[in-house]
Amino acid sequence: MTTTSPELGFLWLELTGKCQLDCVQCYADSGPSGTHGSMDYSDWISVIDQAAALGTRLVQFIGGEPTLHPGLPGLIAHALDRDVRVEVYSNLVHVTRALWETFAQPGVQLATSFYTDDPVQHRQITGRPTLARTLENITRALALNIPLRVGMVHVNPGQRIDEAKTLLHHLGVEKIGTDRLRVLGRPSRGRACDISELCGNCGRKSAAVLPGGTVTPCPLSRWMTSGVDVRQAGLPAALAAMRPHAEQIAATVRPIRMCGPDNDGQCNPCEPSCTPGCDPGVEDDG
Image (cartoon, rainbow, N blue to C red; front, side, top):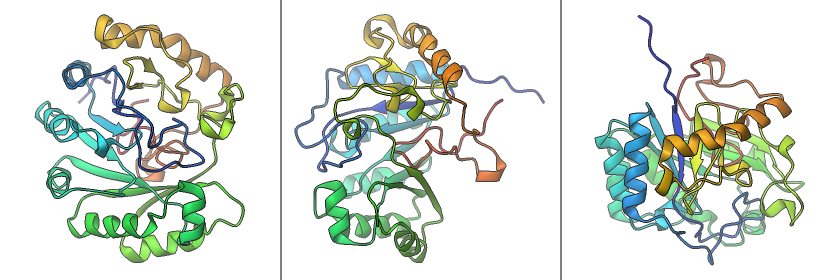
């Protein structure tokens, strides 16, 4: 039977620029001083409705740290009600009991970043002594049988990546992706963003909605916004305005191979390892 390819299979929803951590490699330059932006709860609800109408099968809530947004539980419930699966990309520093109940629902999965098994190295990367809390919450997610995958980025020389992988496997984490540091956002230190740092698949049946209502091919290509506010123009018009940026990326960067059976349905490198990731678990439609 022939199926129709969705116009928009996957959508990042960047709810906030606020985060407990201050990671040196953060593409979004988020941190404790960040804000939730100008999109309110009803705006995000409208985006989810429009995405579902365009055939979106999976949304990923990102930040900043999405668990800091008070509307997250309701937005997850709304997406599930629209038959859209959900992934939450969280640092897993602090998860309330209510959020655990939300995450344990069918159709919800988690992703997190992990860098090292060494507390000193962890603090050097994240700016906070939160390794033990993240490990505790990884263990909690696995105990609750919540699907979980982990992205790892090579940030510093001597980083204990292999040892961290061993630890995660011992805990029961099965899906682990790795990537090099992408010099975008905070790592660029104010230099102009280089399109060659992207994977080349940005905007390919996917897009990101940022906290200010603009749309971009992916969160890492955030300087290439459509200039159209999704609240005024609607998601289809914002996607159309974004399309030239996606075409520019595709013409400039040789795309990394997209999803397929060889890598368990995961894209590489931007899923999930350079945070937040592209289309997790959605098969490529060609």
